[in-house]
Image 1: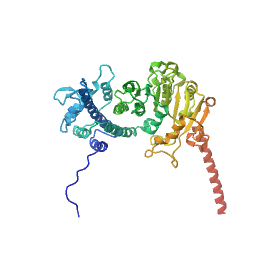
Image 2: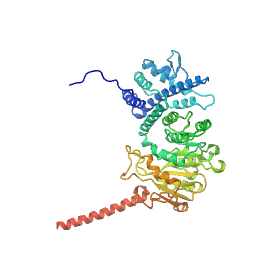
Image 3: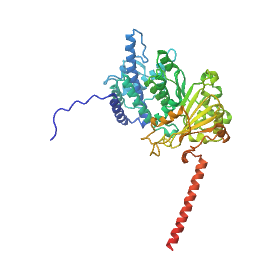
Image 4: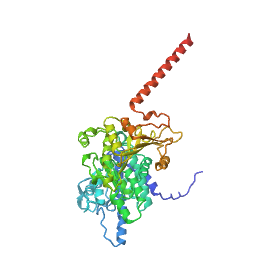
Length: 518
């Protein structure tokens, strides 16, 4: 018998549920729009719309705070370009008028007057001193192009975003988590260009191991969407106790650079959403500077990064490096840049700059230019630790084994500690659906400050490494042979040897079968 009667009122959605529903609905809406194809076009559009809604909610909170303090408040975005002016009304500007207002350099504004279009206006923003949110907004929107063709579908997306109010720390935290999920989805399609999403567990481990202290400057010269910088900001924020501490964190702690417009925009937004009022992220290729001209004013306390590898730079970029260390391998160029960007102790009250860098396995055993770079690293820097990551950490982007280099610009290397991060018991690999977890690094972090050789850790004298052609690809003496960490020539020889043995066994079996048939 069918039940009758009124349906119970559904429970109000949480912010997380609203955001999840928004993502699904926005995808459905945008699939209808013929002007969009794939994640690379779809996600940025939703991102900048959410960004403007978030900004307006934050601006309204600040306006109220200023009013209560009887202070004058100048908004970052002026009427009629604020979200509340053109987007908040469900029956507001739509269709061709909305597309014209968003896209055109000059259009009829929501107040009926002619003036700059929305994106053109946002790109034109600037502050009086070049150091506030208006400049950040302008830089972000230089890379924004609205690819949605239908103004009616765009209005549908705007109306759904408008139903979410980012007015509390809890809601902002929820947005940040969803935002990072969007970034990950965005980065999942970029793995074929040598740019891999660095798992949050690896990022957090690197930050915890290098332990930035308030007052130190942190740089990621290939920051992508800002994962390392967000984690470093969070690490430093926990150390803030006073207003002055907060000022140092906001103004003199977090720096980055990104060459591609889309990741650059996402990094700015990501840091803003996590609480950094004025992200100091440069746009452009960090390698486009003559490293001989890098002076003490350009150096930083800490570099945290996973630079792209496998790429190839133009000859004009290679010319920025010493003649005997020029290479087409992007990772090696970045490694040289990072070495130059670290502060020298004699110019920093005796405190050396330090770095944590993700490198492919080829960097460890490479010869030629690669070996010369490693020789400099061993002789002029203290390469104190190499953490060898297990298979699949960067799945599904690449199966290439990766390593974490930890070094500082102090004295020459005396010995290099190796730590082989193990796979969890019973696992043969990591996958996209079963990634590495931060808790798995706890034994390594416990070992970090009180080092002793064990099943996972061993050390090699620097003299031995130098004498061996700077081959840093040393296997764990306490473990079974790991064929994935062998140099290519050794790997090929090993495979051929095994194939020869298999062929011999097959011949023996054939002989026995032949005898049995007689």
